[in-house]
Image (cartoon, rainbow over all chains, first blue to last red):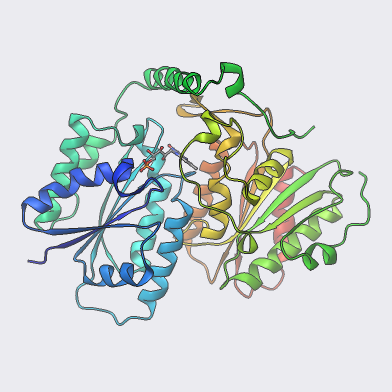
Length: 213
Length: 215
Ligand SMILES: Cc1cc2nc3c(=O)[nH]c(=O)nc-3n(C[C@H](O)[C@H](O)[C@H](O)COP(=O)(O)O)c2cc1C
């Protein structure tokens, strides 16, 4: 069985500190345990040639990205455009690489990622990758038992050559915490951070741009 | 409606972006031309048509030709919320786009449709609009979103260019605009699809414009 996985990190925060990277590590653990080799590339600084050769030699491609305005961050879209353009000009291979997308968003409900997942799926088809499923996470990829379990189950399935099982969706689709609690907790946190930066509650509400009349 | 001597010619003679006769007009639009190098000529002609229609309506417009603008990608640092509230710490044309966005009654996103979504050229500007919102969370309808920073936000018109009919990508494009309109507090939103080689695009865009600005 083939055993080369390529993880593409789509966060500007990079290959270590981002939620996208953290989440992908949980997913790839079972792959590594099963003997897969896992290569990670940061889409923001990946050399184009290296990106393309890595894609061509991978059996499984995992895109892990944050959600930016209901879609993917601009640099991720640019890389997708490049990949598809390149794939259009390369001969069709016997076995297409498999493709999985994991998206995480800042709001509590994972379903905010749905539009972007459709974009990923479209990308996969344009790039002639075999769609192997998607995982959508809310709460900035916060890791709780149920989410960790979902990612591990997905990783195990992928390591055996299966797509992301439906069970993973069941484990991950519900908000991690009650929405009101997320709103209140989040707002307290923002205020605390601002205070640490020497900003008052009022400062945070600044309107530097002149609104329309 | 008042309007001075703005002409399309002047707008497009300028390489980068141009505001025309803005301050005198009652209504303003910000147009982001997200054409990539491959889709440049079509996006430019859509942009020119849209700007012309708006001018005829007496609107002032700011036009940003994204591919000519050196705009850094959003770093996701949230400094625009917690260090310099309301403004990105990176000083480049994206700040001007955010400023115009808030001044406008309508934002027009012009783009080749890329996997159902926006081109990277358009998206690099949109990603940098995050300072126009507040960090705080609230309910919008039945979902969690950010609290608005300003009282009013522009309506959205997305004009997507496709080589040919593609129901899936068209559906994604409409969904994306709808979702964006919720996050960006746009009261009106429309998606308009233009096909490559389509002859009469003016009437189509005019119809969508009328729907989204209620005119
Ligand atoms: C420019 C920008 C746009 C964003 N848009 C959304 C959005 O539309 N919906 C959402 O739920 N979160 C949104 N977020 C929040 C991020 O998706 C969230 O913080 C994510 O966990 C970041 O992941 P990372 O650490 O891998 O970069 C946005 C963040 C930024 C900086």
